[in-house]
Length: 481
Image (cartoon, rainbow, N blue to C red; front, side, top):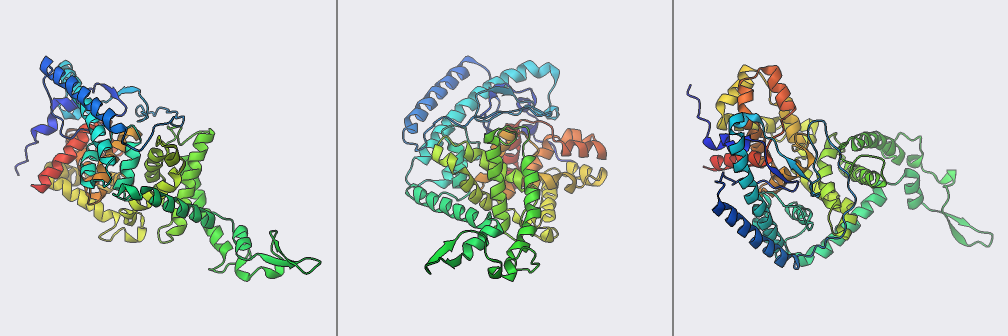
């Protein structure tokens, strides 16, 4: 059997060398290509940057989101690699996997080319931010254009990512004049959900059946204390085991709530936004907990499944850090509805009864396997036939958690920009990104056995996210062709 030749774009030295220092808000540029480091390029880069900055300044006045002081954030480090806060100004280095054709002798040349690429990418970020601001200032937003721009990565600043994600998830309508009304309605609805679903059974009983007592003069007065025993119905008694008993339901919910509490406390322990003893971190944990409990009670068919907290975290983080104080204060409500919308496309993956159905997680993993076979049969055969690495061993987590555990937090936000931008839903794009992850480390996989390959895929190496999304985009083009 003749093996297909690996395309040249995959092994470009630009992606294989240690990346240049770059801002933590660096966005992926799938169309980026190596450039020569000459004076004309530098002049054109500076010119493009100045022009883009001017455009940003011109449209910022029209963009409705102001930028007050953002909440205090603290970022800790992981054992695997440094975690960068995408809203901070600190710089860090990317290091892609050495599997993309790197060598010690080409480090200087590659670094030089990468430095030019970084400058061009920075100019592109500024330009894309200006274009997104311009689109968000329109009365009727062109969602096609917003999706196109967002798919390349959303530059941080001025609350752009928070607004764009709400648009991409259908939480905000395209007609801008409807935003205030829609937001007020949804936030009020969530408030009602919390009042009804997070209430203790005693409070529910008291609210539904206020006892009426006559005073000495025969006037009816409301008694807000405990109900008289004679007025407690069988279904409302704490020892009732009836299916319709609110107390029986409460005790069943308690088990789920305990699981939610455990998972919330384990959410991104390396980020002080989610973890720690500060009032800010505890407040954020409470919001995650509230959202998951309300979701579980409103969706009894699914309830809560371990891992949902990981899908919730990026949404809440982005919305809570919106520079607009009103939006940040309502982040819990906004996150709830966006979480529901996001999960609607993946809810079958969390339903164990559907695991073996055409919409279940195993079917989706099979699609990934077929996708890899279509694009790289040699790698597919080595993984699944020679080394017997079942894709379920690694892809289950990749797919169900939308890659939130495979990359550091800010890089996962860039991947989500691309996933959420797909007009047909994020699943197809997710499978392309997963396939690209396999292709990028193909040399190490082809040279590995069962143990080494499984370890590699369950602990995916640090990689250049720009290159990853570039490869995924190439797979889209090839599939379309």
